[in-house]
Length: 333
Ligand code: EPU
Image 1 (tube, protein in one colour):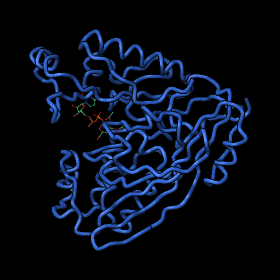
Image 2: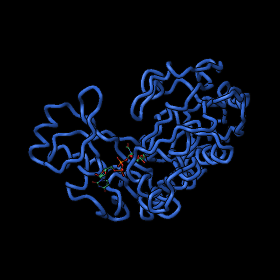
Image 3: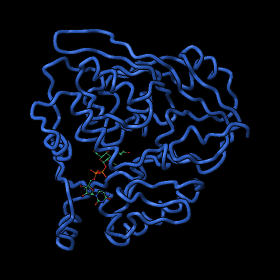
Image 4: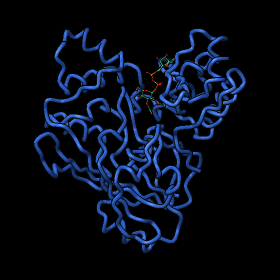
């Protein structure tokens, strides 16, 4: 156990790996896959993992670089980025080049390679709306495969790589289809509209939206450099109409987002807050004071302590609301 992973996971958990290899190209990755005999773990920005123990194996840190404008058409531009590119750097590149589509996804921690795995989303946009295709290496054969959008089976915080193809491929590059001006702005999220109105902006640009999202995120979500966290710890649950009707009668203030198929999405943060967990601290773990869905490490929490807190929260929500919260963060054991 000789490599500390503390700086490589946004929870700031101290855990060690036997070996740590930085991957900078597809060819290098193929070579490593051919030689490797130990178990291995694919690491991006470490912003969606919880380390429970030291890792008996090799960490492959995906650092494949480069953002490139691939093709420019009258209304659209195809932009590619290596799996190791920092997500927010990609968003800033797009905004600086007046390419629309990524601005609502500003300041999300993590890397480009991890972004399609769970169809990252925020402030009214999911990556599936701008995703075009990706390149991945098949672990069993080392062969390169291109995946088109329809093969990804994108869902809410979900894709084929979390289901049927889990652990089978390593994403190395992603292409995005972005817009040239005039852009279609996504302003449905109330908080974006409030920030723009407060700043007196009535003809927003994509830069204004990016800045608004940066402001909202910075005010509400803890910066992992100050307080360890991995963003939303659980997914927002989607429940059937029957359970919703009975809960809504009991809790008329229950915030809810009806889905096209008749199901209803509920904010997990609200459910957790109602169970009394918001801002609660146990040792060095707790939920964030301004966002109950975000579990935090105040200093030297162990992964197992955060996991234990998550299980307690799940149990409270199950007891009070009959809803099972699903973890969004990946547990590494
Ligand atoms: N709320 C509470 N208590 C809280 C916080 C929120 O009751 O402590 C309620 C409020 O009613 C609020 C609602 O929950 O209106 C929704 O809250 P928020 O807008 O903060 O969004 P969220 O549903 O908690 C989701 C994503 C976030 C994303 C935001 C903004 C998931 C699991 N999380 O959070 O994504 O940034 O919307 O679009 O879908 C992430 O995935 O890591 C992440 C941060």
